[in-house]
Length: 280
Image 1 (cartoon, rainbow, N blue to C red):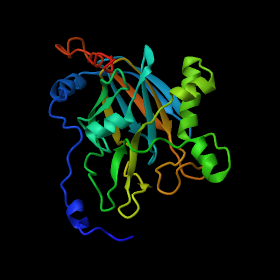
Image 2 (image 1 turned 30 degrees about the vertical axis):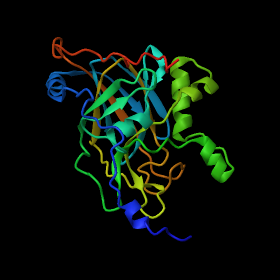
Image 3 (image 1 turned 90 degrees about the vertical axis):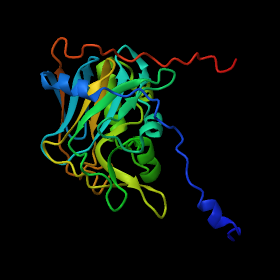
Image 4 (image 1 turned 45 degrees about the vertical axis):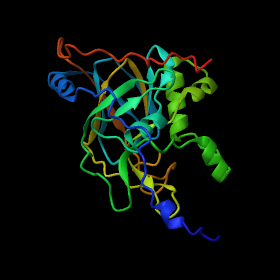
């Protein structure tokens, strides 16, 4: 293929950020951190290796995902407790905050609601930044390991991938039939996962997570949440994405309630104000 004469000039055009975020509502991190200091733990859920578990977080509470025994990544889904059609929207979160989230980043909900669901208030892996391969931690680019892609590539059924793990946990929690639950399981925040895109082929890659026991990612719940977390069958994702051979470990979810009055002046964000008419 022959390059056009102006190929260099075309490549040299500076990029433009698609969604300038200067007008986004800014989370009040000092308020959240002050409220967190006096918060008490009110619940915890252990997610077994190669499985998923559900948990509830009322608006104005905190939840923390903790590595407890060994390097392990997790796939996180969130729904509004009372309306499961409102669920985490990884694509729009990625467009607003970038490919990977850390402190101050927010998880946004699906259309037509499009509001903050949770805000990251603490990230013990925030030091990692970007490595020499372009890898970063806590991505919103990978969709989740799933049985459909696994079958496409191997011709085999595998039921401990994160999509199936989340489906089983969500179905058990809600009483939904598996086929209905599977349709409401959605693209994830890959907690602790180290990922990026190769520079030569642009392919999505994973590498050994830098997470170690005691590391955690902590969130402030902006609305009432039902969460589901899968302890990925890839373990730290250093070698295989879905596997019965990879070393896998549990993850811990802790829920914290702030003291009365600690969030004075804070209100749960309203749903998006767009009219919904779409020009009709």
